[in-house]
Image (cartoon, rainbow, N blue to C red; front, top):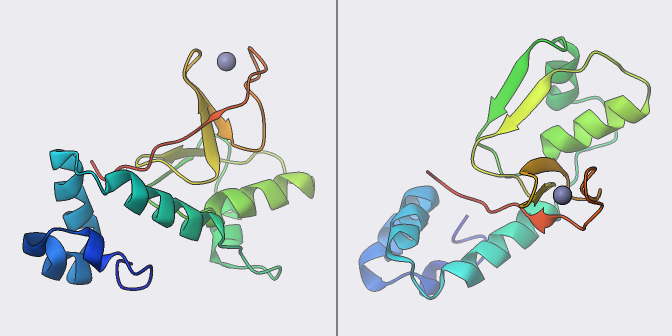
Length: 141
Ligand SMILES: [Zn+2]
């Protein structure tokens, strides 16, 4: 991740090797220190993940969602939008009885209303107050 997005130089010297080999661990340590580069790194990571698109053809995410029922839960640590893109596509095609999803470390395709603590697709507004949603923070912990 750090190499792909050219983030290595934003990490302090003692975390550069770790950032090359285990980006999440290095990012977590940077986050603990509230480093000045944290926001820039998070913005680049967010932009990268937000640009990703699932293929139009049926894929692993479609099969996963279709194999579960409304009473099931998909809990994920992934920041990428693949699960929500598949979920939205299936829903728009009329698939009902979809499982719940929990994004344990945030997700680029989800937004949050801080007043109502509602998390829905960032393309929507808060269903209670109608305000534009805040970008959901990405976290490691
Ligand atoms: Zn609201």
